[in-house]
Picture (cartoon, rainbow, N blue to C red):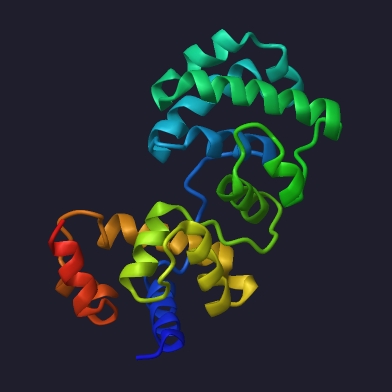
Length: 216
């Protein structure tokens, strides 16, 4: 089966399983989403959604956040892990948003990625979910599934992102990003995966891919 045919069939299954998809990180505005995505690094969405209300109760806006002591931010976000780095990043990006962008989260990749702690994947999530711009955030989980399904041979998330963008139209990128995340959690785990029972891997995964993963 050609890669384009696989992509179309996988998308049809994802649309059937997840006709409606909501962003897993709770937020009210672009700033809230930006902070939540930053906190989600090596942390579950559930934990982030438990922590952000406590953080935003102390500081709802970049102006308010930049006035908080970094130590106070660190204590609040400690359950998310990596709190020393994340607290410094939140304080720094809040100052830059106020001083360089008039208190508004910028809406370009270049400006977002210039903020401390904001990489391409974080910027892609904000561009897609906060501003409705075409973006296909690819993390290690989406990278893994795209490789399993034969949609990409990328050796890293950057290559996989380029491959997926070639297979799907821009208007579908943000939706597919969320659908693949939800599918991976429900049907396609990293370990102990039953390829034969998976709605997509059962027909999309190659014998080589199955053999490769079974040796882990």
